[in-house]
Each structure stands twice: as structure tokens, then as C-alpha cells.
Amino acid sequence: MPAPDASPPRARGAADAFDYAVLRVVPRVERGERVNVGVVLFCRAQGFLEARTEPDERRLRALWPALDLEAVRGHLDFVRRVCAGDAACGYVAGLPQVERFGWVVSPASTIVQPSRVHAGLCADPAAALDRLLAALVLPG
Image 1 (cartoon, helix red, strand yellow):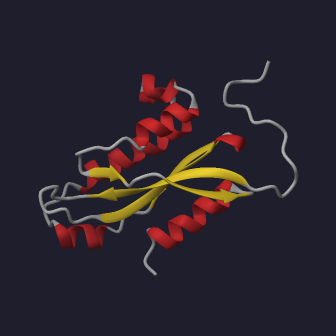
Image 2 (cartoon, helix red, strand yellow):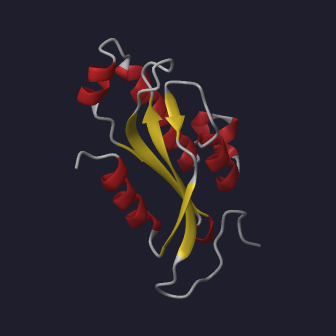
């Protein structure tokens, strides 16, 4: 019997649905200013769940010079590890991918916050994640 996250066979080059959210740092929640720092993408059909982050520390410092960048890096690392199912992250990392994705994209009032969930189609979720990171996070 296949694992719960196993994907069914698919046609070569077929596009699959995926969901994604942008990860943002909101240094001062009361001001509502934010900087996109990463993307998390979930493609159920291909058993893919991954977060990639590239925080622009210069931009973050411009919004809040006293920001604890080490804490931000730690939070982003935790999100990446939960997506990867790293057992060291505790109970949530052992959940099925769909539940881990739901946990990562749940609304939060912390400094690191997810956007609303958006959808797309792709044949290669890793390449789609790269494109989203370049378009939504990296300096253009």
C-alpha cells in the first residue's frame, strides 16, 4: 500500500494544480509594513511541499533597525524544516503534507506571516517554486 503522501502515476508533461503562499516579515505588526521573504508551495499530485526563503536583510533593517534577524532566520528555517517533515520539529512535522501546508499557511499575528493561499498549474513544482521566488521575493 502506498504512503499517504504518495502520488499516483501521471502523464509526462502533464500540469498539476498547486497551492502557494508568500512568506512575509512584518517587523512592526501595528504598522502593517511587510517584506516578502519566501514562498511555500504544495502540489498534492506530485507529493511536493517545500518552502524557499531569501530574506533581504537590508530592506528588513530599513523598516526596523532593531529587528532580531537571527530570530527571523530561525523562524524561516523552522518553516522550511516543517515542510520537509524534519522530525526534530515535533508533532507538526510528522503530519501529512496537506496538514503541514495548512499549518504553515495559517493566519498568524507573528513577525513572519503567510499571504492568502493562491493556486496555479505546473508540471515541475520545484521550477514553479523557483519562478515564484524570483517574481515575488528576489529583487527585480
